[in-house]
Image 1 (cartoon, rainbow, N blue to C red):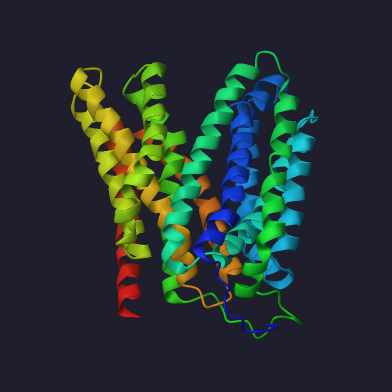
Image 2 (tube, rainbow, N blue to C red):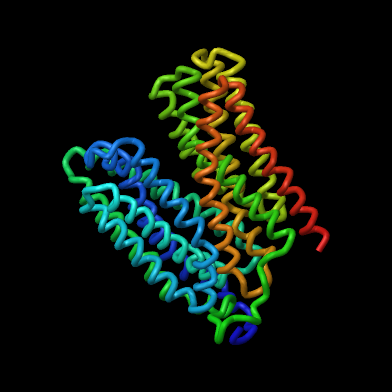
Length: 408
């Protein structure tokens, strides 16, 4: 290491001033994602006439690229600094989605997926280490929880705009808008990476003296990250709609209402839960979030497996499922990254978040695969039960980490 400098924390007023542009930039970036969120799969399968398998290949290629290169992205951020990693990773994202506006074949589509995955593996360790470099440890859960809420608001706004624009605007325009939406976040990292470089300084030489991020507790934390990804929010986008439509025979309007209730609950619960989450350790908060997901799945099992989900009682329980699931999202999003960083040695934030990003990406592959297999082989009780078991495993491993945190 070039030195073991202490992180330079900004005074509270300066923190607010520094982070306000970040939340605006995050909202813009998330809105760009929302613009293409409902369009990308349709464009690949229908407009390009590549079919549904090409959509699966696109998202699979993205997840594999991000998963394999996550540790490398963290190491490059630590070696060269957050500014360099953010610019290179962000430019990869801009190039990927600009290319997406003009692709015509499967090879080009997969190139876009790989380039976007590479960009994310570089950019997010740089972004997270920059955020962590400017805030004290006791504010980490609040900061990342608020970030998750802003992302949800941005995606919802972008998806709403997309539904209005898609009839009159070519998909290429939406892809180009998404590419441009990365610029504000890149500029924010460039402007504010000084604090992160004090906490996670660029390294001289070959970095042979770096402390390893690996420890038994960090390995458990990666397993928790994988399980949270596989059996958490990704399920609301993949398995949950399939169970509701194919096994419980719910209408699309009911599926949409569940999604809307979940999104609104995420926003409303963020402020309500913020002070309560602060009372938990990082791992304790992740355990709480996993427990809430397990409870949500059991509510859904009650609604669709044990009762008539089309009755007023079944509908009410489904809405409770959406709200409780949202609470799990808020709590887990607040604490997961602080938990990972808290288990890494000083100066290893970028490498820790890069490695955890790989576990997260692998979870996004495994979760839908497990969920769709359950839907194909089991009824609603078996499907909800499989998801609940995954959430229970995340809960138990998080409790092991909580014991480690209290025992240090």
